[in-house]
Picture 1 (cartoon, rainbow, N blue to C red):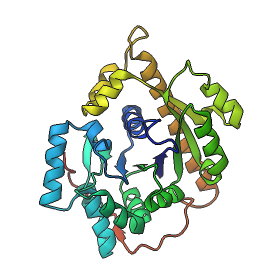
Picture 2 (cartoon, helix red, strand yellow):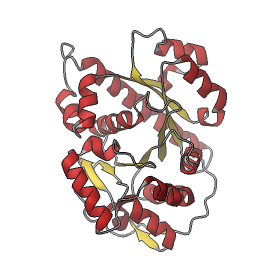
Picture 3 (cartoon, helix red, strand yellow):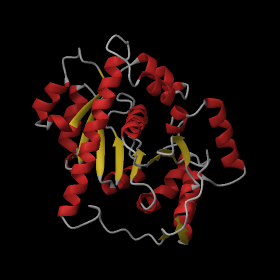
Picture 4 (cartoon, rainbow, N blue to C red):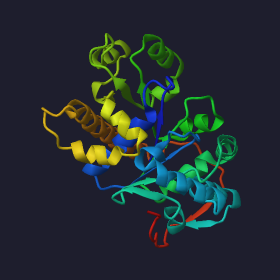
Length: 300
């Protein structure tokens, strides 16, 4: 299953941070594996939330100058149309949490090169990763990239990150009817004291409450994002009590992760009832997958 994390409110809902904390908390409660990647080359990306900035800088430099790795290598497999096995895919990814959450780095590509290659092979990349990992999560740029459009169209589920802003809310629900058909909603940087609460959004737009989660703004979590300490922050606070200053944030993330897990299961059941493995249009990529090979050990 491929899940796209996206927002029509760039810079306001914390899409990258929401994905990073939801993925780790989900992995704490479930044993299934997932792989994360993005279709944009920014300094503040998924890798920088999980990894120490200094070690991540060295990792990027090594991949950029010495060997094509990560997403770049996956795209090369798609370009060549060669037989690819699970081990080849697995070794392109970094294990960031307990061999359950993996990150596929950009592999040294700048934005222009990444977009040029992804707009041709976005569907192939997702198909290939789905052969190895039960869940593929993509952090999608809010800009009008062709690869973003293709990933949104092909994804099984879209996590729409909403803001508590009337204009942005109206813009989404007026203009993105196709996304709404397969959407789960997260209100990012949520402020419970705003005049626009989760209850108001659910009532105004006729949404099922169980399809809407919240991720409150938390200064300590925001600091952890910039320092590559998301995992240590979540581990340290996961079982905190009500007296802890981070309790409301952790409780909301746990609830949102649980709701999203249920939405994933419902989506799978619906697809099975429809008699198809994925509700996607046929793709024309030439990459072939040999699933019988041992995966070996991924990069640490």
